[in-house]
Length: 257
Length: 260
Image 1 (cartoon, rainbow over the protein chains, first blue to last red):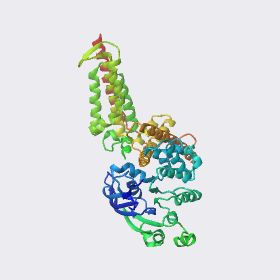
Image 2: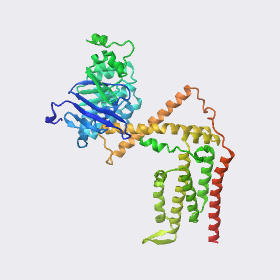
Image 3: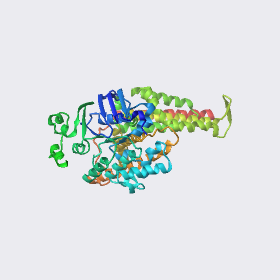
Image 4: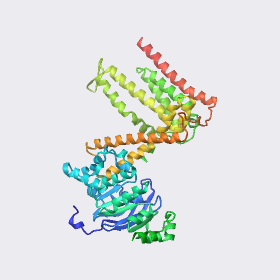
């Protein structure tokens, strides 16, 4: 579906993005970030660093105060909004914000229906998205009867059904039990798209994302291989990032390889 | 936070209206609203006096006129009903701008408009000079059933959260390409509100469980500490009610005098 001219452009290009809320509080101070197609990248940073604000810029919910954003070469601007919202799928931290229809199936259908899909094509999309997150049997279930892990995977399905090119997740592992974490990780690893994950969960970032950036006080302060960043203790401490007790990124890498 | 402003009408400041304990103000406001309601519709000037009294109260409380007018907008749906009255109520007709309007309908519409506006102004002054928590304490001192007070306090506590949740759900919908412009959007909005209702209800249950876990047994803990009103403050509060009664009685007797 991507225009031929856009092929080969990076999935996300952010240049000099600055943003202040209407009350004058400035959150982003010139963010530069380029994410290649198919890359999986974690955005790390302390609370209040501007991670969620950055995320809301990616699909144009917030309009940049200064700077430019391109998704697959297409500028994030009012005229392109429907296509931008299709290309960038946002999964919010609280799945209850995303799931609001009486059944999971109807909820997954909401996004593609907004894109104008109807009938067999629509139900095909729903089935495909639910299968991708391992919830194929759940179409008729009510969201509030699912566990948190299932609801979060259902929330991922609601955006997968729009066939996005970039999947953005806000704290995907928050409050999940270990099995729920692992199941979500399996789903995310199985997806063939660009993935941006905003998280505090450093082991999860290491497990899923080869590359990480650290966002602090509205600026990208570090960009590199996740294992390298997590092993750089002075860097980590200076940005209020702490590894869980007993976790050593070098050992984790050695074991998994 | 667009909702926070709407949900918290308190305007910080100084002055005797703000230092007066809430129970005095509640009694005075309630009394005054009753006076407004019993003032006969036909005594138009009496409503003018009521308006003058309330406008001076607003001035005393240093409320900006724009603030009061914006808050008065709550009554607009009721005014739509009042606007229909002159056309639908049967009775003698009067000619106005080429339209045949019913005289009793006009009177009733005026009464509705005047009473709603004045009653609302009273409440606006009360709410703008009393923090929500003090209102609860005041109601408690006036021996309102504890259950009602508990319900009111939960409403104040959680309405902000519900509004926030509604806003977040709106952002999540727009992220999936939904633009709430067409008529089709009403169905989506209805589904959102339904979900919000269920989730608020479930949150209520969770809050209740959490309360039980901390030993809640159906009654709220003893009264919050309060300042007892000085006799002078009760006197000021009753003076307002007496003033309202005087206007209402004057309106009633003069009105009767005209009729007979």
